[in-house]
Amino acid sequence: MSILTVFIAFIGILLMIAVLIQNPKGGGVDSTFGGAQANQMFGAAKSSDFIEKATWGLAAALLVLCLVAAVMVGDGAAATEQILTQ
Image (tube, rainbow, N blue to C red; front, side, top):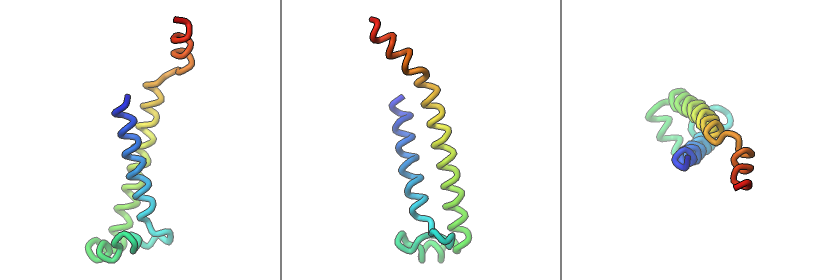
């Protein structure tokens, strides 16, 4: 379970970075994070497409991992009651 928690935290951090890199106007990579070089290498449309796809992919992965963690934990109230009665 702890390895799953580490994956959730790692994907959450990557998702935050992907969201912060995006330009709020939809113009590509923000200049603070090397946007000029990225636009020259990939082109403005390709860099924004990659970051947008990465953001959606990371969001989907985070959703799936959170659902898996919730299923693995199960009913926490029953486990707590069992511990208290012992």
